Length: 469
Image 1 (spheres, one colour):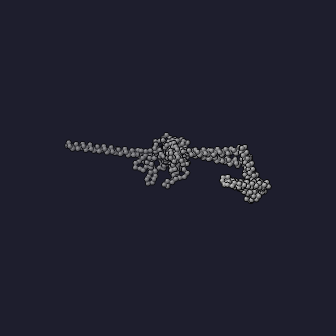
Image 2 (image 1 turned 60 degrees about the vertical axis):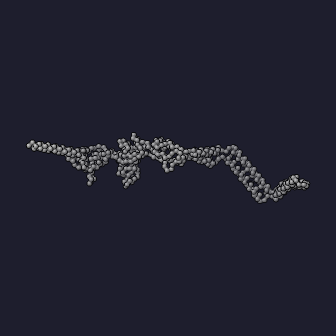
Image 3 (image 1 turned 120 degrees about the vertical axis):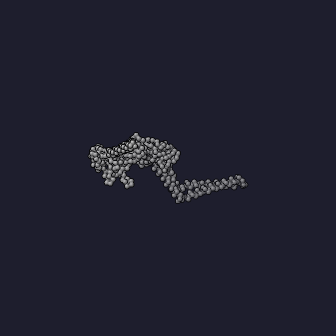
């Protein structure tokens, strides 16, 4: 009996424990089921933002490759990668010794041209006039002498000229006879006889020359001599005309054309000097804007490179950054320049940077058959250390809708068969499916266009197809 009573007690304990455990499990399941339908949201009325989202990368407003216009040896490199520079700073410089000489040469040429122009404007100097007059008188004298010679040849010798020539012949004969007598008087040989013989030879030659001159004088000038004399007259006359023209030019002063030509030479020399000075100036690479040096591909002492730019400069000031994004053709129609943009960088997810739509490309780009438009977003100054090529997510605020019905996106579902969007609406203790028409969505909130009213409670039911989750 005692053993049977013990079994009964144990059985009661086991059954009680099982019943208690079952009740506990049932209550837990009821609580879990209640929790599954307890997550809900109420349809509210309020304002809502319309936005377009896009991603891109940070770009500087300017990225310039700085190169020397002419090859040369690099004398100085004044910057390193990462240096911040101001507009006009010298970044690198070539050896300018030869260029400096070219500048001095051009400057001297300009001074000479200006001096010549000044002389023209001042008129002839007295010493120049006197020199021209002297040249004219000399040329006139040459004409007179050449004409006299020509006339003399044409008219033949005068009686006085013939008498003088005959007298020369007679004198030469006397000299020859005297030399002959002296030679004949010396009987023996020796130095004295040799000297006498030489004197006789000289006297004979003098007589021959005097006789030839008389014969030529008596014969008169031939045609060749007359033509040569006339040519001398013409040449002397041409020199006289040139001297007269030079004097006339000096006395008349410069013409308008002379002044114009001299002024043109001055301008040409001035341009040559400016070009030389420009080459001198461009022998140095100057920063065109304030920025950051991103590459230095040159070293002092080497020749300028040809395969890559010596210096690369980024306009990387905080206020100069921008973002280039691609926007789908369905969204680009809602964009306009000046719209406010909120930007979040992957590198700084907790910071929001303000910006604005700067430009919208007028022509689309095709990417895998998808039509997109390039949109440039400018950024305002920010405290975060923005760097080029950082990934950025932009939200372009298109407009703000007032007094619209709103729901959180997580509670909206989609029918996998029909694509219809719907929610589960709580009606008393029951839950019913309600098809809804949705509008715009932004930051986890979606606009309800039809199907629900303000104050309706939508509940979340497990194992359904979420539209936005």
